[in-house]
Image (cartoon, rainbow, N blue to C red; front, side, top):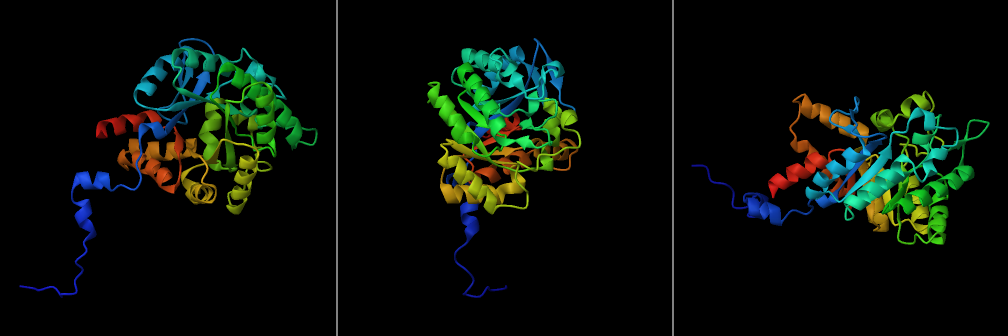
Length: 335
């Protein structure tokens, strides 16, 4: 009989992993349905439901179908939805004027959701790209550059429109310099002091956004152009801290890192540095990679929860993810 050396360690880490109740009790991070925000693509018309071909399992919904399905999402414990418009081509323009139409698609969707489900959080994107014929997030000058200050004036009008419709959080995703403070001022002046601002503070010029642009119909408008003059360089992390600091100083209520998994280091640094409410966006390209791996049988469905738990471990307070409904169902089965 082989006898182990007396110096063999008496501390065995596996003891605390051997029993399921201990594993649950000692988990350092937990993922719950309330952590999830579901991004939804909204169509005009009624009784419409269109699959997004580049995002298997995801659909564009007309407002009536959105409200109908939102009851199920809320029952699953999902805390909020983030709305993104699919604007008819005829309503797009150079300056994106449809973005602040009080009777536009997203204001109508917000009013319908808040009437039917007042406790469901509603987040609305503040950016011009779904509304412009060129697909940029702002107003384009004669030289072809996206104009910062002129864009902010448009974003202020859009934010007021969305707040008036009942948005709980307006979410500037444009990355114009100084827009958070300007939006906060007009919201306060218009007596929308309780409308929060979720700032896309560290939004990178990422190739992971491709399927999203197909979903909202801006990919063809953008064409071969890019957004590198205003979205962040993927090579930079220190710069993200400067961006977050500026947005917090301008009264952002919550900051966000986008994309998610390729930028876990940025998420971690933001949370550790500022200790502020911090969200993360698991974007369309991340969704497609994981969805494809699962559907092809290369990986198990468990990678969904593992990927989301990684965001919690890195410091995220909430996660925007196209897996929200599927993940919420999985979590419910674990209860």
